[in-house]
Image 1 (spheres, one colour):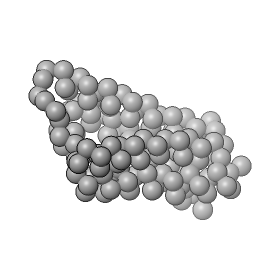
Image 2 (cartoon, rainbow, N blue to C red; image 1 turned 90 degrees about the vertical axis):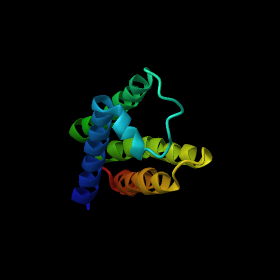
Image 3 (spheres, rainbow, N blue to C red; image 1 turned 135 degrees about the vertical axis):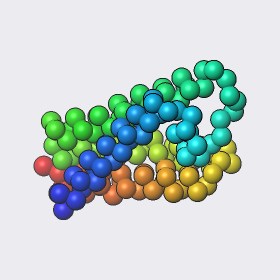
Length: 126
């Protein structure tokens, strides 16, 4: 079971780093899948989106750091806390009447995967 939850944690960390990198490299393209339309098309919009990219990369690196230097239980705690991000994204998209497909299919699914990895890590972590 350890290899499975560790693999999921690694996959989540690498995926969020890749998404963050995408937001830095090509923010206008990346935002199409997020689930909300941009409110305008001003010159600063790509820079605001790049801020999301930096935060995504930091969130992924935090998981990787705990995988290298932390215990199983600590990795689970980090995943549990970071699951707030996709849960919040999902709820905000739904509240704004954005894409329910993206809200549930991307953000909701990500949160569920993170929680399914976090819980056994916290319970059985060494």
